[in-house]
Amino acid sequence: MGGQVSRSDFMWVYTQQPHVARRKIILEKYPQIKKLMGPDDRLKYISSLMVIFQLVSCYYISQLSYKWIVPLAYCLGGVINHSLTLAIHETSHNMVFGNKYPLANRLFGMWLNLPIGVPMSISFKKYHLEHHRFMGADVVDTDLPTKFEGLFFRNRPLKLLWVFLQPLFYSLRPIVTNPKPPNGLEILNTFIQLSFDGIVFYVCGLKGLVYFILGTLLSTGLHPMAAHFIAEHYMFEKGYETYSYYGPWNLLTFNVGYHVEHHDFP
Image (cartoon, rainbow, N blue to C red):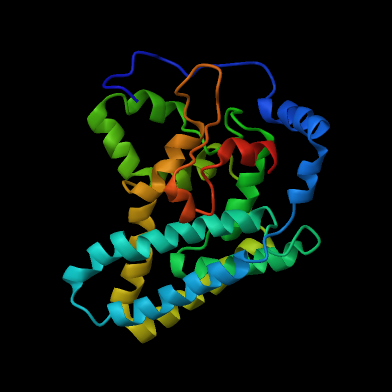
């Protein structure tokens, strides 16, 4: 992430991602870790309160003038919406109702998706599980930038632009590099989300939709909440592909900063 990129290609390795071996070694040495695995009963209550908070906020903010929409979307709605995307991340790992109830986790993810404004919960799961299984694999792991991104955004101003456009690249990258046909749950997710957006437009007007969607776009780009996108897997030290962060932002991000641990035990 320096001033000018001197490399002309990514760093390629031909060994298996380290987390599979780490998981085996850790469990052999500390089998009691298995007792910590399983759903978090608090998650559904905390994340549901966040959805309700956003719905109430949207109603009142829609009655303000447009000059308030952008700062409130960035400082308030965007923070909550980004946190909701990470709650959806938890549902993709069945951390709300457990592995025995996958459909309940998917439907709950659609509920958390509502204030985000665009349908994403089911599509995210489809690609995110491949990110764990094939971490760092070219094309398959769509969390990592394409070669075009690596070669084009080479200096500080362009890198700043790339960070600002991160939501665009993050959403379009899977479609371009690893497209998959939509499944039934994705269609349902889209139908529910667009129907909800229509209700928001009817009740709160355009300001309500702008508050939701702009908050999502701003908070996944040049925003403190989005720093984890870079911190998680961009190589800062040779030989290490995953990094953890143990600071206070974990309180707002459902502990996504504990990323080495998350990949060791997804």
